[in-house]
Length: 191
Image (tube, rainbow, N blue to C red; front, side):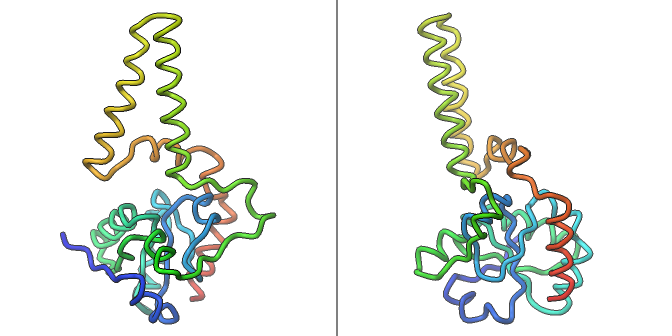
């Protein structure tokens, strides 16, 4: 299935006519998002289907993530439900790289907003160091932990998926509160 995509320059000129849905985690979203974007994390798309369908009937829906991988998954999921959407080529990374502004959450709204790739790097690096230390001081077999993480990172790069990011996305600081999702869906209904 081919997913329709628009580049950041096109999106910038059409931003006023697009409904923008950011499918990253709340923490990533708070760290910087396309102006006017509504945060509906990828794993919450199913909850928001009817509201997204209604929005798509009123105008074009642009789906955004950090690099474009998660937004493409969301577009595929929505297309399977008969909802036409487009993805932002290169995601918010490409948006920012082209010099376009990002909106950020107020400091009081978020305790600490780490991007998902930063969380993955911290977790993967910590596990590799743990495996090496345990392998040195406890038993050499613990080095397999480091090898497993390395293999997972290679698999992640080859398949453009990340199981560690999916797991980290389920942590409480990466989950939207019910009230936040309800407020986002109310804004989506009114857009």
